[in-house]
Length: 187
Image (cartoon, rainbow, N blue to C red):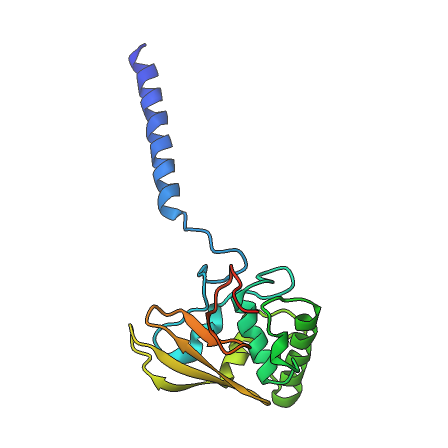
């Protein structure tokens, strides 16, 4: 092998190594399917009033069977869009879809919320719902538990932001549940 061939091969190896290094540095981990933040749970940190601005989508084909959906159903129940806690089951079926559309429409009529009435729970819908969550105790300092309550038209329910930032809520049966996207323990 002559010197010219060696230089070409060395140059090709250098370009390949540099390309691999650039790709490794610029690649970010993929977000969890259907979430904006990539987190497995509803999450917050620091001041609580903007915690839900980057939460995932809840709809009939995204996180359709989850504790996150159960949390959303508790909001629908508290605001009268679901008429019974027995309908809080963590399954985003036709009943939850229709209740979500009714909830969005009511928020638009009563408060000019500007929500799309599509039956899907995304950033705008969750951020609007968070307007009705109030701190009742604890602390929003890092590593502390913050006690919260959703105050609806027809009822209230308790939540808490744990020291790790993950949210828990009281479900329709009165049990504390973590608001996770990828599993369902509420019924």
